[in-house]
Length: 308
Image (tube, rainbow, N blue to C red; front, side, top):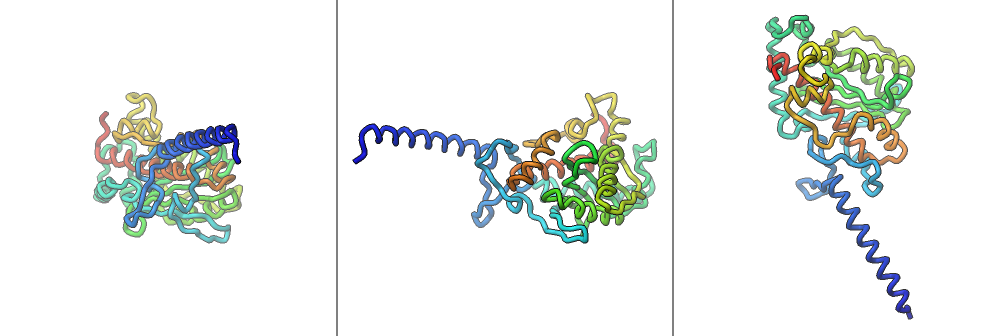
């Protein structure tokens, strides 16, 4: 027979467990709202859906990479990596169709040989380029110097008839060489690169990591760096010319639930160590938005929408 004292102890434990369960449930609801497919099956939110960024300390929420990213494992002579391929419509969820139409109009108008709002001939290389010859590049790394691994290369471009965001993800440190090797093939097929601070950071970083990994690398493409363009046009009008500042003032939008860039390296290390892809979802979304904002800043300039 259980004594009265033992019953009191069991009741106290039950109350404590229920209180803890309620707190965890509330926290998980804030971090990862439940999303269901048309069949009622639970699925991870798409990268374009609004959601609150997952906290690194949330030990109760665990998602596999398959739950946060629909990708294809690519095999190369250098190894394997994960290729994630989405249309802009899938990333933006609602605004992608209009964005794609704007892009095609702006790039198509350049083929007439007249590049407006371009006193420095910055965009002259786009005149003879087809839409599929232009790629936008943004990377995510584990540090600020090329002595630390690169784990994600984002490429926005016109592939297979659509404007798409293609992300090359090294799921651990051993897959970096394979992702670099595949990117080089995409680079070789292009004529123009567009980036944001890519002349000083992204492309030199890729070059140095290729050298370290023994991956052949040759940069022959014209390169348009929108950071330089932004500084020339808005440098005296804005607090700074960081990408998210241009996003706010020029593109007229702000991000919801974005992971700060400074937190990305440690978030990736945690993913490699634990396999929990909660924050990888946020990193992939951050990278896709960087690509889209870089593209939209270019469109704003080509359309003459440069006034604050």
